[in-house]
Image (cartoon, rainbow, N blue to C red):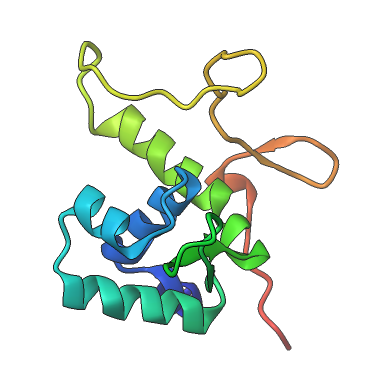
Length: 135
């Protein structure tokens, strides 16, 4: 867990990854959407590229700009972002408070809450798990 937090654990990095999932790719758009200082954004983007979560590519529209796009490693963070979102929705919003909703792109139905499953498909809670440490 410590290695994970070192790589993507600060809140700016997670918000950048969230925005990348929402289709933002350009520095100026990240800066505008997040309201983050340019120096801080530059540092976080550089770290996310160094960690292999994002990669810097030529702009898709053929312009002279560069874009930050999620790598496979970055796309693998989707469940983490959804889990954080769902936790926040369950614990940080009033029942009547308006907010965006994550929906199935095909059916437009809200995404079901994530569940931890055993290899056999049984739903697991915290008390059902244990850590096996290396010998």
